[in-house]
Image 1 (cartoon, rainbow, N blue to C red):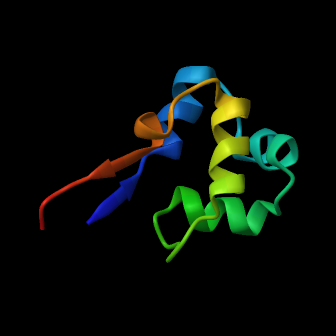
Image 2: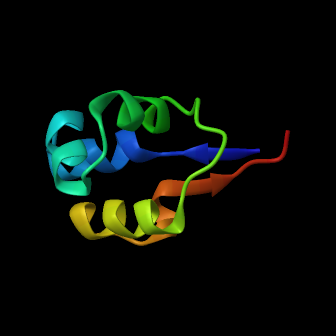
Image 3: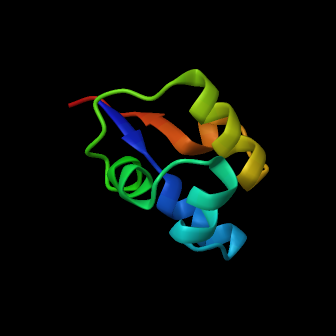
Length: 67
């Protein structure tokens, strides 16, 4: 299973979900879906924008865990 750790990176960067959604250019509702792990997919373009906004690597956000 893939776990999304946006909340961890937000805390490290001392950034709000609202600020991140504005920087990335997606709605707060969609960012919340990603942050809460409810998303079924993520565009690479969106992942790129999130990484740029948080100054991190995709591996800092996405984690694979054995179920």
